[in-house]
Image (cartoon, rainbow, N blue to C red; front, top):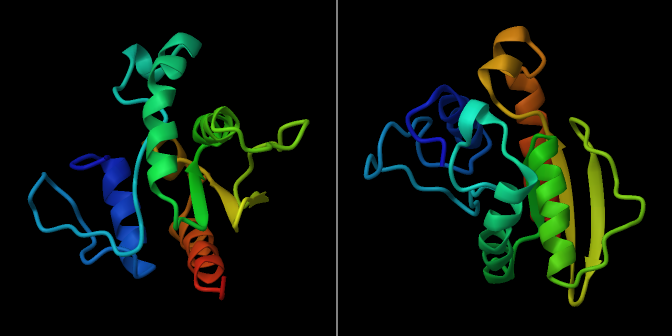
Length: 160
């Protein structure tokens, strides 16, 4: 995910600084990148025209995210990159039968939502998406990304 584009350059450098990747870049599959205690996925599986997914496209892809979340049983923190990921993750968790607060918590950079699941607590963190629109304008800075990932590492490293 994000391999070979500027969003990926930003994300993998930040994951590396946080100790969650073995190298700061990923230019192509097989380039040696390994994530450490992390998993990168997406709400949508392919970029739609004009990068504006429709609700139907989101809903068609949601079962893939749901299945990944089911398989990630030891995950303790989810970092949503942007409001679309935040909303999609909440939809996926709700589809899995997990109780999502009503009204749904709003996305914001640094937003934090603790969800009590059977046998564990899961925390969602919001982070602005590392798109060029956000990084070139300064809406998202490296220290902002680093702070969210440091918070994720801190939460994940707490005793269960």
